[in-house]
Each structure stands twice: as structure tokens, then as C-alpha cells.
Length: 390
Image (cartoon, rainbow, N blue to C red; front, side, top):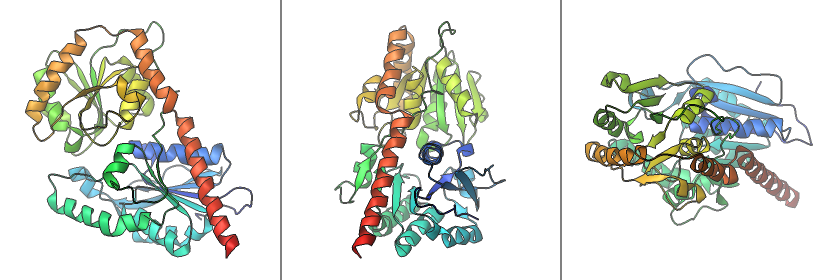
């Protein structure tokens, strides 16, 4: 049974994500943290719904439950594109219980089941919030899919989002990309929050940092081709590539490259603390979650210049280098020169602390969750006021 017990004091919240935390992505992590905060801190009965291709994740009898939508994601496995085909029976079961909840929070509307939840929320007049973790995905090498996505965004997604209680973008740049004329009402920006208890500075007396680390999906849009050229151009520098995807960097057979597939977040944090430099070649909108996680560990971090470098104080702690992912060999040459410059100079504990403090000051997990509590309360109050006036 999906629905929680009805209580007058505590609203029942349904959160819908792409995958669960165990899948390893940034969106999944943020969705989990918000849902857990609703349940554990606010004492709101909360259910997190997400897709899985294996066994359903463990759940409990506490206020935080998880419900699995079985799905097929062969397209993502083959290409890296997150095209998820859910089990229709599971989707029907989810929609049948939607009216049991007081508020719905959907992380990205582009997935089939998420999209249907939004439509059903509109039809049942259930207040909903949409969290946008992406802008308009370029998909330069998939013109048909790009055309289809642009059409869906223009004619279906944006009109639906105008019915949302709030639309939340995780960076200002993503909002400007998706909604350049700011026509969406009740749209706002809440930066992703970092678990600074996990992603913290090295302990005193830790061994000196060494090597370079990349954390992300092994797909073209994350700069994998650039990394392939880069690891070949810098054979004397050890690289650690952490992630998953349709391409496995082990196939490059570069002796200076270690590949770790989908480790635990504590392991990622440990490797970031041990690394001299973190690389994020992709140049999407705004500062990605992994960049802030690296900075929170005090790690010097290079980011593609396509990202918004003026968004907040965290940007001043990043090293921006041009990254034309359509010309990976040329981009890798620029990055190799900049990397050697960085590695030729010594880092300092003061510089590491400044990186961590910039994240702690404005991007903590607690601050993020409190912001989502506020918009959830606003949405619930608006719904109550509308009902009282009828």
C-alpha cells in the first residue's frame, strides 16, 4: 500500500525521482536527502517513488518509505540517455493512490511516470512542486531526440509547469536556459546542498594529495572523449575515473588510469580528499553538484567555461578552462597545459579551507532542505486557502 496514515498535523508527501540513491547519481541523492528530511526532521509521512531494474530497495515502517517502479532502461545502458520505460501496472498503482497525498514533489518532469504523475496531480487538484535539475539538454549528436525533446518542452512541459505550486531550478543558469523569459510563475532557485559531514577536509596529518580525479557518468556529454585524450597526453600523472555508463574507460588501456565503478559516496569523498585536482569537463548550466562536493573536500577543481561562472561565491574557488567537447583533442591540449601549471605550484591548507568554507556558507544540505520545507508549506497553505474560499 503506497499511502501513509492520514493525520491532520502532518501532511503526507509523495516524492518522485528517476532512480533511488543506490543508482549513484546527483539527482537521486538530492531527492533522497529532501524526502528523508521531510520524514525525519519534519515528521511528515513521506514516500519516495523511483525506478529500478532489480530488487526493490529496503524500506521500513518509519515515516520514510520507498516504493519501486520496475522499469526497462536498455536505452540508457546502451547510449547513456536516461530514457526509462516503466512497468504500466506499477504506474497505474502509483496513480491510483495519488489522491492519498497532500503534496507531490517531482524531480524532473521528462520521465514517463513523472510526467503522468504531474498530469494526474493537475486532474485531481493535488498541489505539486517540480524540481528541475537540468535545462534544455543539447543532445547535439541525437538530432531527432533533441527535436522531440524541444517539442515536448515547449508544447507540453512548460504549460504543465505553469500549473505547479512552485518550479524549482537548482541553478540560476538552468532556469535561464529552460525559461529564458521567466514566464513560469512561482519559479525560484534553490542550490543543491552538500553533505559536509561526508564531504569534508582531510584530517590533520593526512598524506599529501596526489593525482587527478573525475566523478560522473561515462558519456559524451560529461566530456569522456576529452578525458580519453587527456589521460593519453599526461601519461606521467595518475588519473582516477569514478562513475558508470555505456563506455568503460578501462577499454582505453591507459596505464595511468584507474577506473572505479559506482562506489559508495563515502569512498568518493575519500578519493576526492586524496586527489590534488578534480576535473569536470562538461559545460552544462551552472555549477554541478560534484564540483561543490570536490570543493567541500578542499580539492582544487577545474570546470568547463560553458558553466555559469558568476552564479555565487563558490564560482570564485573554481578554475575555469575552455572545453569545446565537439573538439576533444584540441580541448584536451588546453586542459593539459592548465593542469601542468596547477600541479607545478603548491596548494596550501588555507586554500583548501577557503574552498570548503565557500560551500559550507551557502550550499549546506541543511540549508537546502529547509528551503524545500518552506516551499512545501507555502504550497500546502495556498491549497488550503483555495479550498476555504470555495
